[in-house]
Amino acid sequence: MSLTVFFVFLFVAAGIMAVSLWFIFRQLKLNKMRKQRIIDGEARYLEERQKRIDSIEVLLKVANTDEMGWIEASIRIKNLLDQLGVDLSDHEDISAFYIVTESTMHIPTHEQWNLLPKEAKKKFRNEMVKCEADNAEHLLRAQKSLSCYSFSE
Image (cartoon, rainbow, N blue to C red; front, side, top):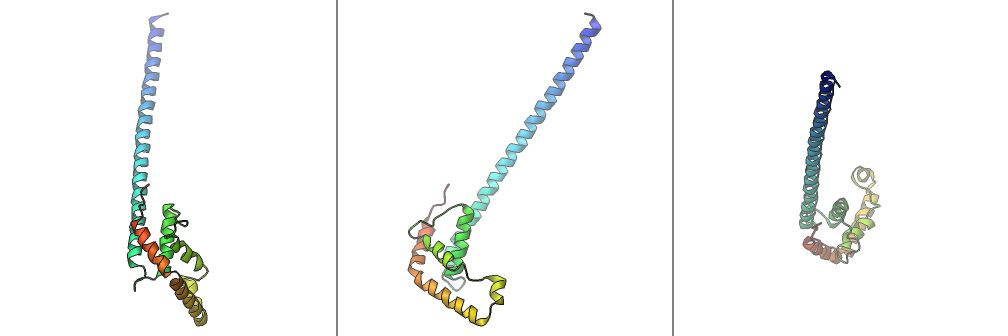
């Protein structure tokens, strides 16, 4: 084997080593970026989760006041619980929010409510008042229970 062939092989081996090192460092950089994206995503998830928990706490405070009735609060609380992935429909007290939401699900909201004739609005309002009255005690227990509930994962 001549000296020229030896240097060619040495040069090719050094080139392969350089390309391999470049590839390894590139993969390490990509892994670091992926890990940071995962950490950022987890932080964003925890932040959004805490916002929903805070929203539930605010709703519990304003429920059954002049600001918000039981029905609207129940619907919003139930939706926030669903977004949190928490199903408390079997809970003895907290199930009131699920019951009220389910029993008023057929009542139109927003634009559909505005399009209703006065008689229909009156009928639905009476139905909502009856629903709130029928579930008042259960809703108060639900309010107290959910305010004490721990949302820890």
